[in-house]
Amino acid sequence: MPSQLTSSLKILRQKCTKILEAVQPLRPIGDRERGHWRLTFEIDTDEDEDNNNWNKTSREKMWEWLASFISRGYGGWGAWATFEEGKLERFDGEDGWIGEMGDQELIMGEGDGSPVGRVKVFCWGEVVLEIYALLFLATNRRVKRCGAQWIDTNGEAVVVVGGD
Image (cartoon, rainbow, N blue to C red; front, side, top):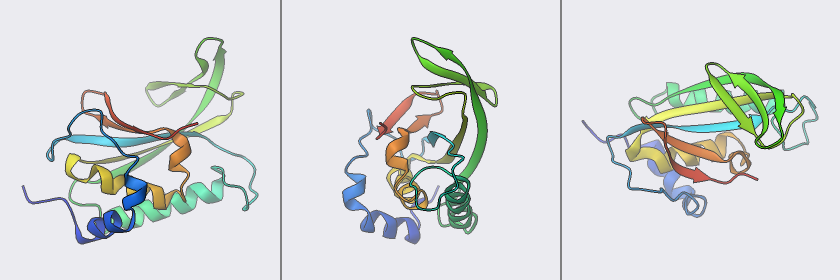
C-alpha cells in the first residue's frame, strides 16, 4: 500500500511541529494500523460568537473544515469522519455524569444533563500526528481541552492528548 502521507498532511506537520510535541503514543503505532481520533465534549447552547466553547457556530465551522479537507482526499486514502450528539442523563457520584451516545455509554466528569458531542476521525497509523494537527486547526485549538484520544481497533487508547 502506498504512503498515506499526502502533501497537505506533510505541510500540516511542518507548520504544527510545536503542537505535535504533545502527541506521545503509549506504544509504537504501525503505519498500517487502523484507528480513530475521538473527541468528546459538552455542547454549549450559548451562541455568543466570542466564547471559546462548543456552540453551534463552532461545531459547524469545525465540521465544514474537516469535511472539506477529508472529502478532497487531503487526509489520505481511508480517512473519514463522523459527528454524533448525545445527552448526559444521570449522575453517578463516583464517575460523574453518564449518558448514551449511539450504542456507547459516556462518562464525563462534569455536566448537568447537558448535550454532548463526539467527533471521530478514522485514519491509518502512519498519519496519526498529522490528523491531530488537522483537528487542532479545525477545532480552533479546542481539541486541547477535550482529552483527545487515538483509539486502536481493539478499543484501546494509544494516544491521549490534553483535557482539563
